[in-house]
Length: 364
Image (cartoon, rainbow, N blue to C red; front, side, top):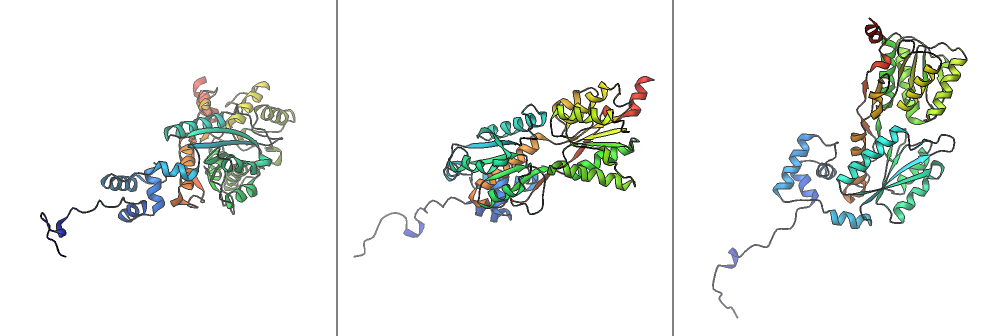
């Protein structure tokens, strides 16, 4: 039976509400990869401003937002990120190290701003495989590890089993875990070039070259030496962990053995400050007698006496990049997209500790 209905014809009936756009739809409209949309909407600094603005405008136009509740269900946690600081028995880096203070503080700020909680964990570097229990047991959605130490193979194995992990450290061959860090070779080269330009020729290198980041800084320093047709005296290679007492003793030993030097390149600001203290103990002035440069540009470096020349590693940018990379790994759309290393800008900050001419000007 065919019954007529009053009102508008069926062809003009109210249309059903359109389905909600997916991230892939926004990516297609913007002409980018889905992972780029995810990065842009999370504020990841790896996406340039123009692309981020285009994606944000499309998301606003189509009322698209990231489903944070779904993300929480996928990660099975209450938005908690574990920040792990490993240590080795013979190279125990104290929590008092200003580099760790700066990085942990920046990570806490970034995670808090994004609505995540931070779980701070201290683990033996020889047992990093236990990091997986933090995720498997539901205590954390993912892990940010500050430092590789000598555990490259362990970290690769953790990444191979799908652990959401981001590491602060050096880019290494066959690296299958996501790694964020500075351009260590370039930083070492910049310090070497600067000290050589200031007239130094007998430059001591202070640090543990068995660690990946320190080894790369020394490699860059050696490139600067070779450029000037100079060799580096083995007596000027001073091994020291990232501990102020160890750095102090190592430099005092060098001085007591009457090894000639006119400059020191320390692999961290903490070691540089310890070196300056040792030089003062032996009646030497910085920079009049010996120039000293550090690495990291911790907050205290600009206020030390003398203010310290160093390589700046932005804790804020480092934390933002690590958190952004980890959130990508936690997003099902981006599984495996963050395995490539992220290298941050390297900048030489020149201060009084390496400016011998400025000392002369003050004396005049």
